[in-house]
Length: 490
Ligand SMILES: *Cc1c(COP(=O)(O)O)cnc(C)c1O
Image (cartoon, rainbow, N blue to C red; front, side):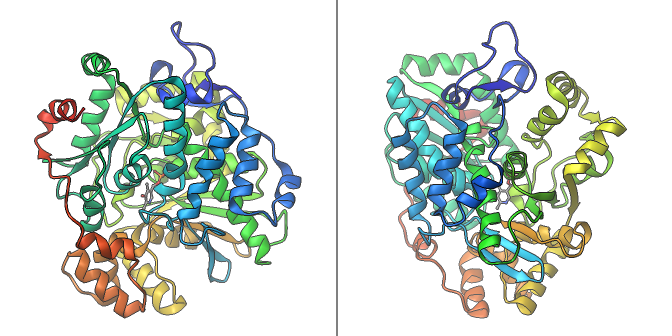
């Protein structure tokens, strides 16, 4: 299958490209994104067939339907990385929390957040394409805390790939920072920046667009790519777990085959939610996708009013920082799917030029057939964490907690909900400790120990070890010096 472009095609680019090409240079004509030419139809027979399959068997067969230009052996190797998850037989456990509410846990991978679901296999796929082409790639990553560790983990010691990972010094949790600065491999460079996440993100965008930087890389025989969440190489692996979670509910006799469910997704850049939408279009029985947000509630407003309005808005820091996003990149792929490339180009250009667009009332009605949304502030989130723990014996992180509000306000009686848990409690422990016991401290290690006592949970070894591991990545610089620092590393 080939890939086409959300804003149409300019004169300089081919009408469609292969999967490999779409993931090596993910930005398409007019600043658009690549999308599959058409989505494969799976249908109920596919679901029935995989009721007794393992996660990997399901994943392999789904990828076969996409017919991408990656060899089967490479795909098998990539999927084998799910063996590193807590339970290789079931890397994504789905747990009943209360009547009608099930939580699909996407955080059982090596870095304890849902980014592993896609980045683990993506690392192998990208490295294998680079090797096959005899090319060397520099992968840039900018992180507010979860993408960085997952990207470093997946590309560590892989052939033909080097990674430069930018994070805001002081802007991540202790655990997230330690996951990055203790990563020891010759092909990885971690760079702390005196600034905030936006500084890291802006630097990344500037470098990706810089002709000079690319020229300097070329002299070293290196090409440039990025592991950000618009890359279809990540999206494709985010369709699978929605299908898996549905099948888990059938296996648990919570639903019968064909019964519709809500998929409730804590959202930032909309990759996870897009995966849910594609799974639905490919045949998964879904009632609606519910988008959960924090105080940065642009998506709630879009889905409720049809307006994407960034005028006078700025990012606020919340207790769920992985969702502190205003420009939610993957929404563009939904616009394309619903309204076509001409309208998508018009809307996205309006957003870029005037920080605003508005859907027509027909378009809004159409969007609302598929999506509903609500947002949850930090205090509400902590209340849900506490209540769900003491009432239902289930401990969730602050990102997952945003789903509890929309579960109450958007679900209709009787229809089951699958909500997605995107991080383990260990990654955001100070907020959770505060929610459970009221303690205010801010240090991860203390919070981990106190939650572990309160909730009678073991701190996973890979988290505990971080606090005694040697720090090998010591670079902290001003944002003006990023380019120089990267070239020095190469
Ligand atoms: C990245 C992330 C999200 C947001 O996911 P998107 O696919 O960008 O919408 C939510 N929660 C956590 C913990 C994350 O790391």
